[in-house]
Image (cartoon, rainbow, N blue to C red; front, side):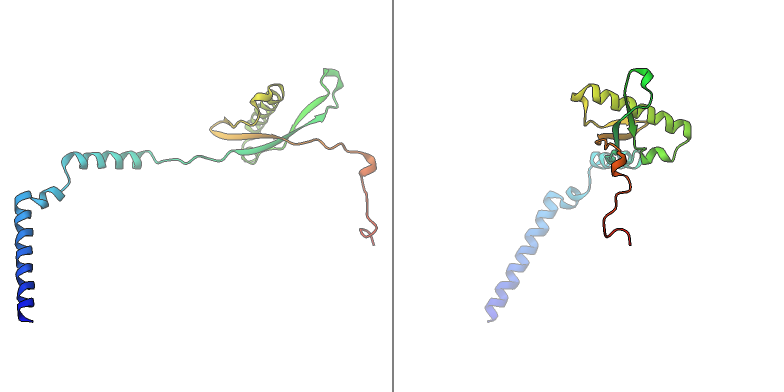
Length: 153
């Protein structure tokens, strides 16, 4: 068994010598050190990410609207656009909210006139919106206060 251990020791010494010679010849430690241009590139990337934080894509607010019969018959148009007020517009000043609702009504009219322009995301003051038309349900007096036989006791 002694010749096997001697053989292992000899191979280890030979391997260590080869590795040390290789490191001296090629300068592995110098090769592992970063080059000046790679340090410069990493600094530029770091500064771009820190100075200009990346913003993800923001989800649009879905705004439902519907066409309802108008009570103003003098204008020649018997339909009005009724918009469910968006959440983003509820927390703004009254003048700004009215302006947003006017723009949304104009956009809804534009989508009704141009069917090819429907289902597109648009932005108002860097906030994105998506209009969805919901059906109008006629209010009829025959359907008001309908009860089932189990509803009232």
